[in-house]
Length: 351
Ligand code: MRU
Image (tube, rainbow, N blue to C red; front, side, top):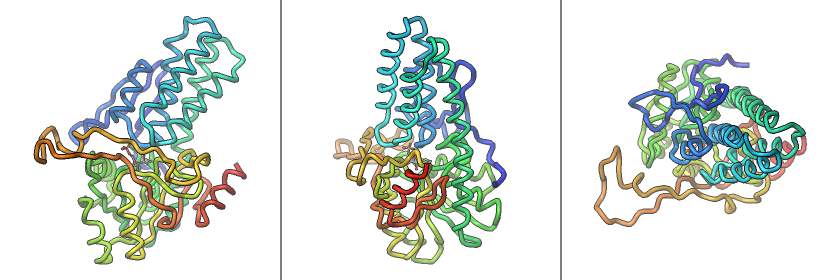
C-alpha cells in the first residue's frame, strides 16, 4: 500500500472531546477547534467548520459520544431513549451526505444493542468512533491505490470541490487517488476548479495539495471545457456525497456540468468514494435530498456583495450526475463499472 504522505488529520477524538481543523478560516489560517458538546458539534457540521461527506460522518459519530457524556446522569432506559433522539437530531445538521446518517446509525446500533451500563455504553461509543476514524484513513488509502491504476502517465487530473484529506479524516478520496498516483509518478498534476459559491476548490484543494508539493493549477468553474477542448485534461476525479443504487451521484454543485463536458470531450470521469457513501435504499438520484444553502454564499464573497441588491437567488449545494456519465466508481473494494445497478448490488452482497 502507498505510504501516507499528507500529515493532515482533519478530525480526531481526544479522550472527552473532538478536535477538528476549522475549515471556515481557509486559506488565511490553519487552526484547530475543540468541540465539547453535542450542540457545538451540530453547529460545527451545519456551519461547515467540518465539511466533506466522510468527515461529517465521523463528526456525527463524535457528536453522539458528546451527547452521551452530557446525559450520563440519567437512568439507563431514559439515557438510551434521550440519546437515540439526540442521535436522530444530529443527522439533521446536513441533509445530502449519507455518510452522516451511516456513521450515526453505527452509533445507534451500539446504543440499542449494548448490554452495558451507562458508563459502559459511553465507552463503547467512544471506541467505535475511534475505530470509524482510523478505518476512514485506511479506506481512503485503498481507494487511492485502486484509483492510481487508472491514472495515465504524466496525467493532468481535473477535480471539483474538495474531496481531499480535509473532507475525510485524512488522505482523501478523489485527492487520495491523486496522492497515490503522485507517489508512483511525480509528473502528474492537478487542475482544481474554484467551486463557487463556497470556493472549496480554491480555498481547500489548492491548500492541501500545495502543502504536499503536488503541482496544482487553479481554474474558475467555467474554464473546464476550454481546457478539455485543448486536450489539457486527461481524466476527471471527484468525490461524492451520496450515490444511489443505480450509480447516480450527488456531489458539489457544478460536478454535473464537468461530467457533461468530460463526456463530450471523451475524457474519463471517475467518482472516488467509500462504500459508506452508497445509499442502496434509494433507487435513483431523484431521491437524493439536495441541501439548499444561504443566499449570502452567492451574493457575497468575503463579506462583500458582488451583485445588485434584491436580485433573486437560488443556492442548491449539490447536483446529481447521471450514472451514464460516470466511467467508474472507485471504492475501497475496487473500481465499480457499469452496469452500476449490478456492480453496486454485487459489492454489497459480498460484504
Ligand atoms: O459542502 P461540502 O464542502 O461538504 O461538499 C463537499 C463535497 O461535495 C465533496 O466532494 C464530497 O463531500 C466528497 S468528500 C470526500
